[in-house]
Amino acid sequence: MKFKQIRQLVQDNDLEGALAALQDVVTDGALADELLIIISNYNAVKSNIRKNLLAFEEATIKENRIRNAVLELIDAAETGTPLKSARPKEQVAGKRKSYLALKVMVGLTLVFVCIIFMAILIPTLVSSSDEPTGSEPASPTSETHNNISGNDNVLVGDNNKIIVNEAEQPIDPTTAEMSFQNYTEEFTEYLHKNPEKVAAKVNLSFEDPIDYFDKAQLQFVKEQLYKDVFKKAAVPGNFKASAVKYSQVFFAGFQERYSGPNAAPEPPMYYETLDAKVLYNENQVLTIRISEDSYTGGVHGNSYDNYYTYDLKTGQSVTSGDFFRGKTQKLVIKLLEKELMEINEVSTLDQLQGLGFWEVTIPKNFYIKNKTICFVYSPYEAAAYVNGKNVICLTYDDIALYLHEDFPLSRLFD
Image (cartoon, rainbow, N blue to C red):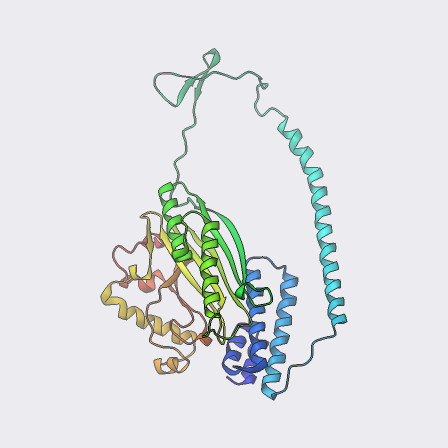
């Protein structure tokens, strides 16, 4: 891809595509090192936006800085000249102080508003809680309820007053949702345990299942989810212990790769970010997306998503292998090929392969969205890294003829 086309991607706000394209043309020297730093900054901003850690204004400022850095890098690579010098430190410091002052003012304003709101709300709540809620005056004495006639729903209290218990409402499994609690952990370890060396980082954000009406299914999800996310480092039901063990495995590989007589050159950075999010949580079906962003050496980092779906009616994981009858899989692949050609605006398989696509298969990753099934091709699964992630969403009617008779998710499309 020529520099003009890459510059157009930046102008179209496709920073991810521009950075991926630059990795193919800027492969060594100072510009390559600068590109890796820009990619790291872009991935950090993207991760913080996904976690709602950045305000809109701050995110916009950071993205604009990255966009300007990319354009400067393109100019330098195209002309073969060094990167322009940075702005004077005094100018940078002044802008940073102004921005921090603005953030402090906004923060103080929000605190002041909250104090006024609580000053108005608390007296109102206290006064309302002191008022009797029934037509009869409240009594400080309690009533003794006795069971009569062996009927658990009929009780007799003082003065022979009959009380009928309200029957406990049955739970509708199709509307019951599993509850989650979010945990985050960050770990850092320096190469050779030397603070002057490069630091490896592990950042984990995890939605842990904590409650569900069916406790057996809750336990199934907790055990299977930990295995899917943390692999051999999983300590079922214990996020903290799993996170510590996972980071230890990651750091051990880091130290081994860059130590000893055959050590690889020290990298400019080394990190892994895992982010688990619930995408679907209804009708006894749960889908969780695990987003991974990492750099462990090489020309570029890696970023991809894995999707895990659990059937809370049967206590089983659901995979794309559970979808289609064996003899129909070739027809499904033809359908996927057609969709990929439409997405990439080509009309033949040869043209699709000319864009960097390989043999098309049924991907392992999928998720449910608005009564459609979306199949996800991760980078390197069906095409070169520069083609990124490809998503194909099909309606139930598109694939109904090819599905197993006992397709486990068919109830979602009734």
